[in-house]
Length: 261
Length: 257
Image (cartoon, rainbow over all chains, first blue to last red; front, side, top):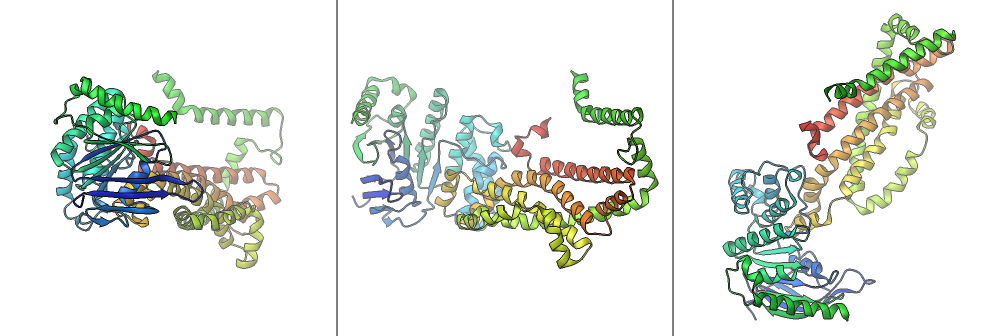
């Protein structure tokens, strides 16, 4: 597929010679606007995969191309969010969201002149995740779910083409998590960025993604690819349907086999 | 409740007053000689009698200390920045610095005297060498403990080392820095006074030394008290500054309380 947005071709990556490959023989391709999820047991190299996509790491073997170009350094078109919100406690919510614009071009060079405009944009983003009126609060004054929403806004403020999420909802309670699924779904429907979501939660993967990849234990290989053909837009009710349960069960069986092996 | 809180607020003053009263009583009841252990009242008399010279020497000590402290802050921050921002620098410099820091600074004073002669310079330098280390360690710690995820977020956007240090590292190390200032300022007083007792003809240290050799113990104690008041006052200044500058690090508790 020549028109793939992200193309990972037969990639190995080892952090050092001692520990061996973190991921091995990984190949996949992503279309622009696609939402993919990576699931697998702990330590299977899902986060490593994210580092490859963002250009933070280069593969030992194989190629990663994004938009048809070989990835050789930080891409600057990605946004990232992690399990911990990693907000800066000395900055207000608004200033935290604005942080990427102080770093990445072309915003960086005109940040001072256009600060008002960018602040408006950040506020609009915060409004869209239900954080209206929290712009001047500090991170420690927000709940865990709110912090995670701010973290996602920070990942999106520079309008990245590729959003990388590393277990972003793992430390939240079940209800907050489902609320944030819907927020992410709505943002994605609206802005149509490409998403890589790394998660342990099979329901989360099934509910959100177009395609789910199952990875093996270390060294991580892709064992299965499952297209999720549930119609969009998906409402939370769909997670209680038989079809949904069937898909989750199927993914679970893959994981079960890995754990036994 | 209100009463309890008022008690808490004044508790350190009450303890101080109690100690002074007991001290005074012991001296009077057992007729302790002023040459050995002067009573608070005798110290107070001495403080008033020699108020002029004491002020003069105290100012000398104060300015030596502040000069040494300022040097210590500048050098301490610079070294902390170097050591905290690069693994190579850390490995290369840290053991040396620990070694240097374990030298008793009073042992260093004679060396300084040979180099710079008796007087203000050794006092300033002793204050400096004694107080830069905690600042270095704290700034370095703040810089070295940036969350790797946060660094990834910024690096993926094309941030260079400097960006990460300025946007994240420095603000992050500020609470450590201000906490270390409180330690450093009191240490700086130790340094300058020690140096003055050994080799100076000005300053509180010198005043106490010469008063001691003349067996004027109330004056010696008066000197001690003046040093402690100066050091405590400066400590309070930096404690306030810390709260003002890095309220976020204490989760805004102080701001609201």
